[in-house]
Image (cartoon, rainbow, N blue to C red):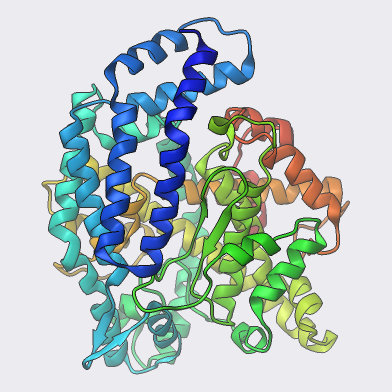
Length: 531
């Protein structure tokens, strides 16, 4: 069997099951029903059987070692080799992992924190953490949400162990290493990137943390030593508290943010009407409270799931998720099925983040929400400072996830509650700990394992793209308050250089072609750290 025949046979087999699985996951996310998650579980097992095929793995391994002249054929074989490699091992073990992961995801889907007998949605919890000033009430709500961790802890640890068992059976040190290698990443390279990031942001974050603590201690009428995680206005201290005197919710509440996002994307030459028409955007009982983008068939059916309110958070999230969606929607039409995928997880995150940042851009706000020049002038520096705070806080939060998850897979038997707060204390500078599985309340550990570091790589690449767009398309010298609206060259640049190639190029090659250099952190530092 030659490479072309192998690829053709694989696509014929995988495509209908993939499409059915994507549709089923979508339905399960909306309903939260166990039977829908069971259907998705069954389809996931079917897919796992395909990649578990030992004879096909031997064939694709042999093909991957051949000198294939066609770059597109060679690239598809490389991708299939990684997919089959990660799918090897005991099929019963693989199915057990799928069953347990699906069960835990469903528990996340239907969980609602309870306070005084009342169920609270994630949107309600976010609002309470932002607006409540009574420390006891904040603690009660924060702890109610963290109970999710206790619900899934035992199953999640078992999943970690099973994933490690699978990885070790394939010759890897653990599942963490296997996941990185089969997604074309390297543990040592990532560790060096995050050490450099830690060193580059530690001082700036430390100064900002003092500023935050001073503000928050005054707001909550306590000393800085009495500040706890529930005072930082976010369940994980991943977004940063509102310490600057402005309220974008007041501005964003006056208009339909979904329509604003639609207008924005149209203005850069990218139509999102069909994406929005297929999407599910508002709260429903049983529905997942998170947000995501899904490509159903790699033929144009791209959707986003959200729980929109007209506020700052959902303005940024809507721009973010539509960023993922326009990438998935604009793969080259002639690309084969296997290459109709993003160059890498962090590349699609970069696009989403690039556009999500517009929600904290005074030029964007002026353009779409009609605030006058006087108000814009008073808000401009505060919003810029807030975006810097947001990025620094997020960079330190990703350090928590990156370092915790790496150590989690090295030894899931250790005291994980203790490890969690050691990492939180080190990178977020929060002087707090408790013996509860708060780490397990982060859904990514089950639904998107070994993923979180890609958010930070995405932020770095977003800044690199922003620099490219600002200097070479918009011909601007400053990187601040650059609004993209009404410039179709931006949409064209991204479609031609990032979206159309899909997965036909290794991400390093794609980035170099698009920006003239490999992925670097200097533009993120210029934009948010060394200001």
